[in-house]
Image (cartoon, rainbow, N blue to C red):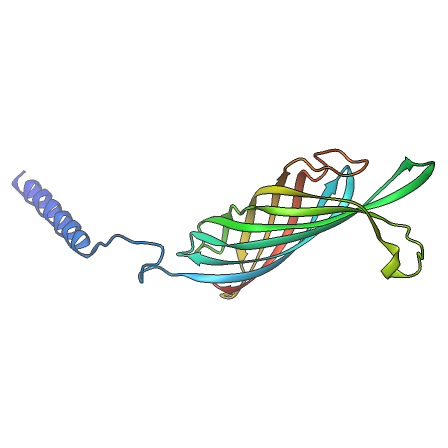
Length: 211
């Protein structure tokens, strides 16, 4: 009994001593603390979406600073193009339109388990963009410079939250597969719905940097 009590006292004393050492060495950590492992990356991505029920290609770039493998903050930008492939009648004429545009802004990306070989991140883009309807049959179809003629355009606000499954392939290279939802303000374009730009985006991203 006495031996058990002595062992318990010794264990408690050891724990208290260890806790005291940690307390004396502990410091409040900040995003820019020297104890943090900070980094950065640049990335490009390719994606697929649907605009007004039609296939669309989405491509983009982004760059961010990484704070202690847990949070990335930077900028991102994306472009999209889509052959809507529908016919609208205007002044007894039939037009085939392509919908194209771009958007970009602030990128905030919380990261869970960034030190693990495979982990999850939650990129959120908040920004502005512009979209245009292009007449796919310009005066000289064989001349690319004259092929597209702008029919209508508008600007919009955008918020695009997403989730990505990311793999650390090397110390300087990562790849991620993800899905996001592009939510925009109302868009006023000829012969399209006001929510024509809203929808899911499936993407593959390649990151290069110091992680």
